[in-house]
Length: 444
Image (cartoon, rainbow, N blue to C red; front, side):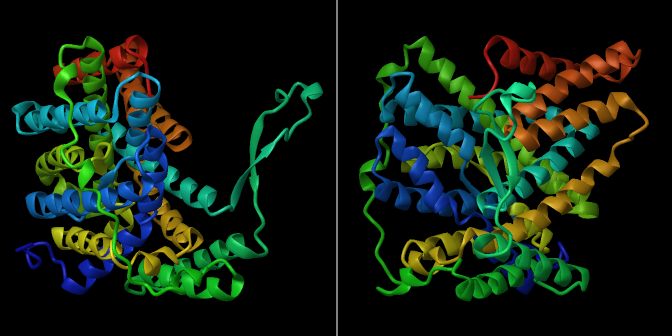
């Protein structure tokens, strides 16, 4: 079914990769309901809807594209969904309608010739910049969410002119106990296993770190006191919760187009990054990107029907790819795990983020090496790539980073007399990005 032999893949490696990806992104079951609940939706209903959405969208990726990528509600996209409801005056039903329509248009774009043209002509330096930027972003998320990196208020005296009063600076958390120490130990364990080329190093690192976290107090087993089996809340009231009465609203269609832009660019940047993790295999798998877009776009529409914000391919899939995942079997395993999580959530919830953080940091390292493929002697290549890298890494806005880097790529080629290297597609996409960044507004 998944042509394992053709892809030089083994069932054991694919299953291990799927488990690794699942553990790396299981936090979405807590994070997405917490964010979307700000729009007035019950967190318990959102837990079920989120899990089902991941299952459906990831199965689409597995069987349509046969790729090892997991699909789930995007973190930036769900935040914008909340903005639509809480600040722009639209109801949840109308916001879900916007998601549905943006997903439908996304599907049409994904099956059109335009998709192939754009994918073929994305500048290589920007591809590598996106991959490296996502790598740093993932590593930073691992450090921050686990408490290794902390934010300090008033780190510098205002009188010194170094920072305004009330500013925030980054510092190190407590590394001698609790979660911080667990991350350090997990990094050592995972790093040593990778150095020794032990199979399933990342997955084994998560399991070992979780176990070590019990005596350190970072792994809380109290959730298992009532057993590890529980029935999920019924979220049927969120199904097909649409309101088409706003189709004549110009502002509504501006939201649809904004969502579409975010979905397309986030998808493109995510795929470029994940193919970069594959290393030498990346170029061989790139032709599958067209099917990946189709799967991603269908996943957006499916998520809307289930009652959640737009789905997107998760960068955390890189943990499974780095573990050797190459086919849809990896994605199938992820989908099965999220389905099981609906009924045995306490068992999965005991895994602390500090046990997952070392895996994310190591995946970030693997993705960062992509920047070495850019010609550092050609500033028309390395400068746009670096801008993409740094914007994505520090702002977590993948689409904005790619947009800004694309615009700078055009400017650098023009002013350096290399205008002939710019294709019509690069110009057109650049104009669209410029309009979005400077006229319609950047990220949300």
